[in-house]
Length: 199
Image 1 (cartoon, one colour):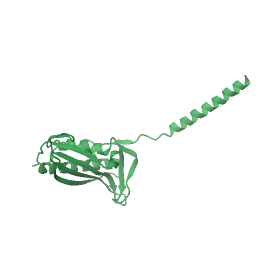
Image 2 (spheres, rainbow, N blue to C red):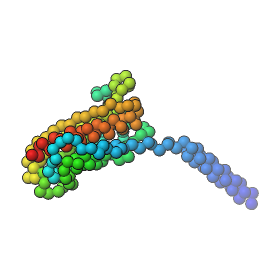
Image 3 (cartoon, rainbow, N blue to C red):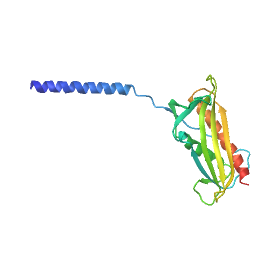
Image 4 (cartoon, helix red, strand yellow):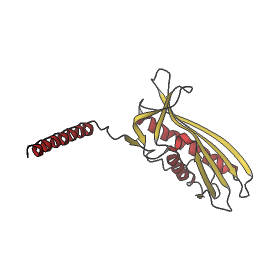
């Protein structure tokens, strides 16, 4: 009987210790990251020629398939990721959606695997917040590489689009807003180019 009581007391002590440690670990849980997206784009279409129906094929460099928010100090510095902030989806998905929306204001945009149509192949190569060396200012920088191909696969034209926007605040929120503005500007430049290239 005494051994049984001692055994119960021992196991109760172990259980209490386990629950205490679990409570401590729960108390130290990291807060959920703040999520950002590109917001709502402007509705007005750019002053550009309408384009014919086109199939949009979009991809991105591997680093932009993750939802991490990339920033760096000066162009030559190594990229870093905000610890407490993330995109709601990957930059590749955000820019693909925004680009399709803005191109569609000037003409039909169909999936990239649609046959019998010219294909616009776009690659997102840069999407990050870049700070000045002293950290006092930053810009959101977006770079797109576009190739227009005929329905038979022959290259018609190609274009590299690089746009940046100044961040109002030097943090993840300011970077997200600047990248939204730069993305819209890049998409509108691409739309204007596409209208001329498809004539």
